[in-house]
Amino acid sequence: VCSSDLSDMIEEYCKINGFSMLKQVTSKDVLTNWGVKIRFDKIGRQIDFAILTSDNKVKFIETNFYNCGGSKIKSTSAEYEKLQNIIKDNGMEFIWVSDGLGWVKETTVLNQVLSSINNFWNIKKRKFGM
Image (cartoon, rainbow, N blue to C red):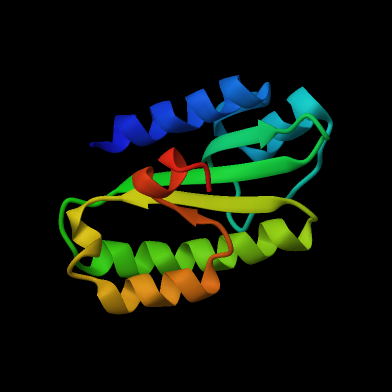
């Protein structure tokens, strides 16, 4: 399992469900392609994926794979919690797909993420259709 597996999983999810998808998307890309306005927390921020569902809901997805624990997981978690709130305030959905052995050593951070990020997926969870 690696980061590209996470991306492949997202692409397969979109294909199976007939969703439109954009990769490495900015707020400008979403406006240009789907006519949807959103302002992120940083100018020029790129999000790994944006999905337009069949019922015209926009979902933003970030993917990360961690081989080891440490400060990167902690800082990313805090950043994504803020990003989720911005996206949610705009009536859209944020999903964080992450995996890797790094989470094994970061159980405290994992518990915080599970309580603060509404949609947190890993490979196993996605394979079982959750």
